[in-house]
Picture 1 (cartoon, each protein chain N blue to C red):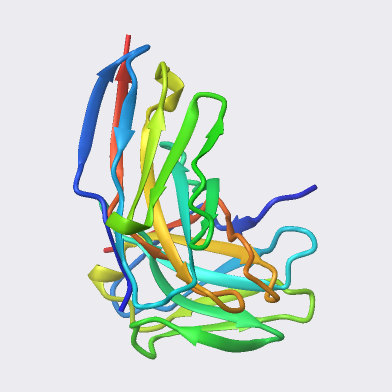
Picture 2 (cartoon, rainbow over the protein chains, first blue to last red):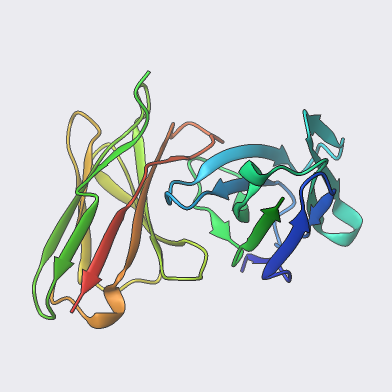
Length: 115
Length: 113
């Protein structure tokens, strides 16, 4: 069975601080996909990134970066120089390989960025 | 390019009633998945539709059923509503020939009194 753990329930930072959101996953599959979604107060889940299990290269997109480590089954997300607009709940998710597979989500980390 | 749309935005029902939620997928997508998100929790997979058939199902009772139409839009039906069915219901669309990223709609907030 697949499982995603986001141990940090809530994080509060002051604007311009860097923050890392942790994600640990469990799966028996050798090929799988990892995702991060952002859920602002409006409720809609906004897709941020997808990572394939066979590609451990870290990725940077503007102030966002992702660290994928298969050896520790982790897929952590770092926001550099956080801004108030980054305040949201962030979800890590996992899907198995194959056609249109379901997503297994973690419980989310609520990030509060204050001035 | 229109994204995923859902209706209604909010819904209030009483126990025992039935409800129908609707979803239109993102343009070009052929697969619709439904998720239930209870307050403070991550979304839980309900089921997925492709070619008007249910392809996968999560751990939800038969009270939860769905349908997909030829234009790829979908409905989620819940019968005999329970208080515990109160949640945000999210629809996601994608391409069946994957792997493909699922894109989510704004959700329908269902309150059961």
